[in-house]
Image 1 (cartoon, rainbow, N blue to C red):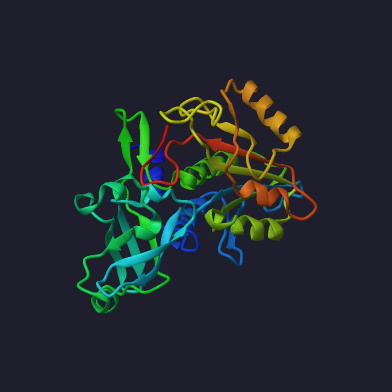
Image 2: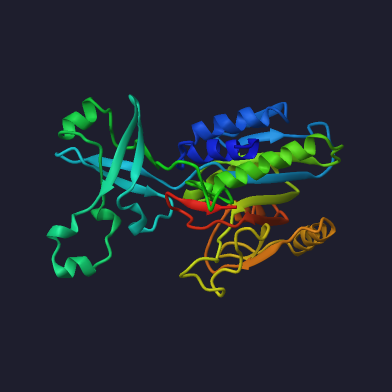
Length: 330
């Protein structure tokens, strides 16, 4: 694996559901320290790195979020099975039959999510869509006391997907968890590396935000702390190049360049900033895609609405199978 692939692997496999981003923050702080000397966190836990501390120019805030969709222990039942609350937007069916890691005060605990076996379901039950309330996590405990005393599992413990980084299609594509938004973090680190050798006239702040998946919370606090003049949010895009998605639902595909979100449920990009990015891409002979989405929401929306309003754009890396154990990027 080359250095980029090693970085992608490290970021993808890191534990970091919303509100529990410490492992990812440690990686980002270590990587960003190669390019910035002033690195700090805000009160909520977002990591802020200043690349050009002495610059008096406009402040450009570049963001990508550290958190991934995950779960939270709700309670342990009498037989030792874990019931949970979702952290972020899971499709209920994506929760079934997967491996999970629970982070307790005693360490990490492996679990597998289960449902009632189809062998004992009625014909009517088999027709129904399984709801998340019917899913549980089996941690191999004998009972509630065993889960709590031996394994250390208690309400409020975070749960993250278990998935290994790997190659798909003879190394052409990358498969792993949490590309939303660990791929954005990787892009942001490449931005830092590229800018290090330049004479920056602007004050560039790279922000690894927390709790995006539960309400853009890190972007809200960090944008108020920084008071940026321009916002650039780097996200995972919504690839529409696989069965079940029409072009009317998504217009981007993996392997065809970055995407500008022209519309989503929470924001529209600044038009001058959009046109600037397009013109730069043309100068560099770089292919760029556009996507108009009905849904979706991202940190750019929080930045855009901060203070007196901030010109903001979302630039995305097309991604297949978001919010699952196995996403795909190129």
